[in-house]
Image (cartoon, rainbow, N blue to C red):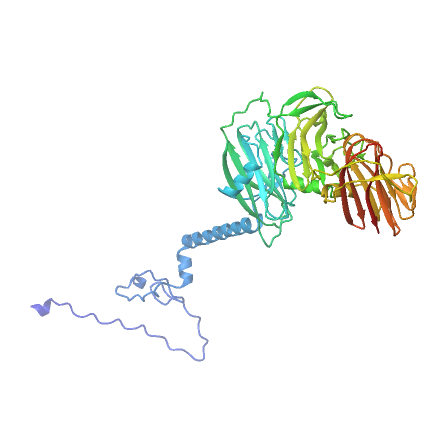
Length: 589
């Protein structure tokens, strides 16, 4: 029977009866629970199984996701990886901040300890700039390698080029005999407005290898950028590096603008430089220069800095010739004037040509000598530089300033035998304005003259009063007088004499040099070009002045009367015949 097959229900186990407590008796401490009893003091960990093995016991669900503490406790490797990554990121970020804002690309340079120690590694942009590259070519000589630094403004920059042979070219080391490299000269930011300052290194016999190009910058500011360009012309191909420099807080002044490797030069250890001697040639016009040499490598260049330097020497004379060099050798400038006089440190002043030498400079730095002419004669000027063996490989420039025009000649001294040589740099043909077709006066019987005793009778000269800036300039260069000055000029080997009868009635001339407040500058008997005599009055009296010329031969003369800054010029040709005294001018003041 089905009912008989079912097991009877199991009755529940009755609870264990508790013994009654005796209030009079102290209670016993709790008895430790038997192993089978489930009465935990703390909740046991639940791993998803029924507690105490009791089948079917429900398991309370864990909170979704767990607490942050549970996540950290249950994932130690993940948390450790995240922490390590954060540390690495922060370190890298700090390094970037340091290198960008604090290190400033400052690097040590040990290849040129004499010129560069620490430099700023500037990443200059490389491109083409047609105008800058053309400007560099104009200032070069078509050498295989040319490196030019150009900038506008008044900052003083310096170009420094390190060659593969370990030699640097810059203002302190301008030449290298191994590669025949030379530095153009120091430009200090004084170019005229709108023109480039430029410094150039040219290498005639360059080596293959690495070249480093630095710029030493002075006067930079931290609040704005200063622009410059470096043009590299390599075997005729040009490229331009442009940089905008700012001051850095480390005070580093040297910037690496370009570094490049050349491998297509044909270096020749036995290379013969372009500069070579030609000569000697005899020279008979001077008393100090008997022979001279020329240099095939002499060239004309555009150099505003050199022109500005020459202009600053020896005042504002109309004709000025300056020798400029930077180095220890002792160079000497000689100028032979049209009157065949050599003007140099041993003959510093020549009255006939109005030439003046500035003084001897024995070298040792930025050196110069200058010969200037307050009233230059028309004619040929020969310009020489005397060099010694200590000047081998020395570069120098000669600047000629002639009536507002300028020309710069550049030379480098090659090796030579002997102790010294005269190098002829250039020859000038000076031709200032003159009065042409001057009227001629032939002396006749003459007119009697009573006020003075030197002149008994005279011939009235036929003269032109056309202005002659050339003679006015020459008159200004004659020494003496600040009131009234009368100067006679002539340019042939004839003995003429200037005689002035002043307001006092006295004749002032070579035989009576101080009379009536007038002073005669001295007798000139005529020696070719550039002759003059002068009479001046520092405090001239009011009255009549007569100006005479005594001619002992035919001569074209010009008399300049300068009275309180006003000029009058009288020009004519005097032809004596019997009578030799000519009245040139008569005036009241």
